[in-house]
Image (cartoon, rainbow, N blue to C red; front, side, top):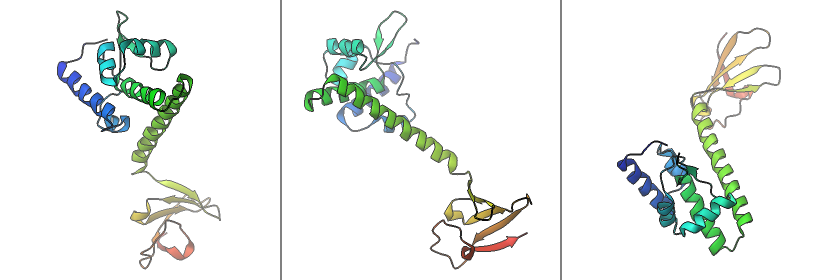
Length: 188
């Protein structure tokens, strides 16, 4: 594992403090471009940040609840994701009275949910400039850009030649559904 510059460690410590205090969440930290998987914190630092005894961290590791990365020498190094999981595990077990098996399941589902939200954001960014296709009732394939652009392209079955269609000028409350009364032919 490469050594990390002190400035980077301080930035990650500030993010960890924000996670612990509830001023930030992993999605926010991730969206800032910080690697939530970078192993930064030693056992003592992680324990202090999360308000947990170092021996509890080692127990969580043995149980598979929070498994830190290891250095070449075998020392545990915790990530921002680990710190977040530690804080949540402590809250769920101490404040909510949930057993460790339940905590493990809840944290797993929360992580799955976070990954799905991240993937959803990624796909939305990709789609912002992309087209969406719909199949018309008569076999036409319709390329639908976002409703705000009011631009459509229709391929007639077999011709391979597109007709450009747009929402009519009187259609100020266009709802995104393309019906024959909504369109004006622009060209053949």
